[in-house]
Length: 76
Image (cartoon, helix red, strand yellow):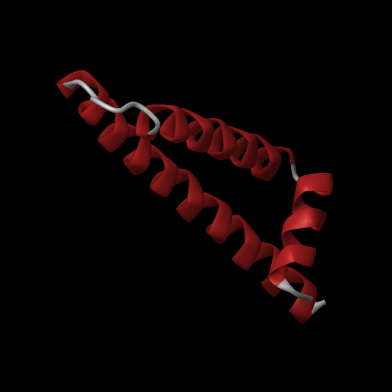
């Protein structure tokens, strides 16, 4: 199973994964908005750092769920 297939399956079947994915996508949109500013303020830069950190935490949790899912399907 490819990573894309695994992601699609988890989005369809795992509520936590889907919530994390949607939150990650929303943070990505916010980062794009911040990066489109020609002169970001100090607050914008601080917000960008916090968003990047939060995105990383979300991604780590999503990868953990994906690994667990893949391991369950290999051992079954």
